[in-house]
Length: 143
Image (cartoon, rainbow, N blue to C red):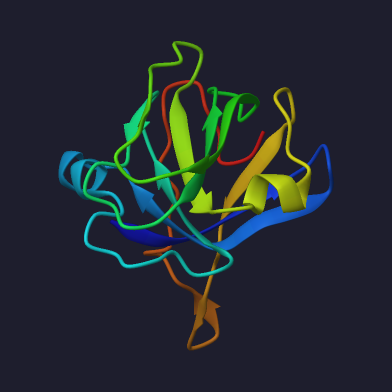
């Protein structure tokens, strides 16, 4: 699992999270947020690829945003409690799990366009090459 992207709602001009980990491998997608006791403000998990999620084994409530390959919001689920399922949304290519109330606070709605960019860290005056965003066929790091 890699760290280093932020999620910005271009339509509403609001940030959803600044510290989002990327779950782009089978193992990191399966583990997700399991074992965590909470999700800190401004943090999240971008599961890529995915079009459904569950909260079995989780101990806290989250908000879920489903996005398509162009980073347009195609589904929302607010205050998803433990031991719940968000069924498949076949228009979604990835899912962002965020702290509870993030969707409400940001005003995010279906149809909004998001921007997901790497959070480049400076190392000895240069950019950190390990701070990369996964890409999918036909998708760019920002829409």
